[in-house]
Length: 184
Image 1 (spheres, rainbow, N blue to C red):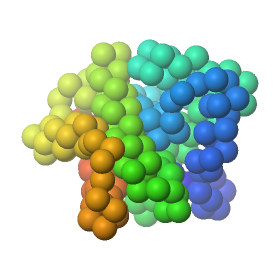
Image 2: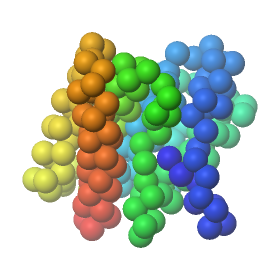
Image 3: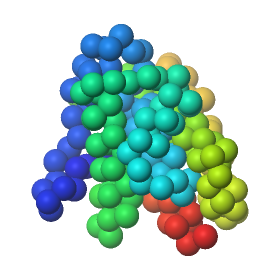
Image 4: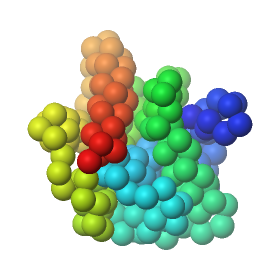
């Protein structure tokens, strides 16, 4: 996930966000949280950071406060900016390439699960566009649902390539869903 503030592109820090979660005793991953926030935005929800906190509470049963709440709201607005960026700078917030492939695959599955929850939250809270998804977007959601069911047993050689392909597919699939909902 990229921070596009002031034309300066910086990677949103996965480990820092994870540390804030641990400080509050929360077991969710930054990937799952980012997926939820992205799903909410992709559903056509307004870009009001407080809505992101409501979604985290309703979808993931997370009640965040302090620095973590500030970071979650910033992640929500930065994600919105990235989804709207004409350079296609949106990226799912996932662990870095140095992390074990099994852990990265689990984070990717968590991101997908969070995304589906965020989309459902957006549809439940009155986002008309989420209820009127195109056939292509509905197919993408089926793919994302399948990715959310990925198991933790991975073959290291095959998984590395598959992981990158799926992450890149997600990147553009989410952009397509978001654009689809912007057009409605």
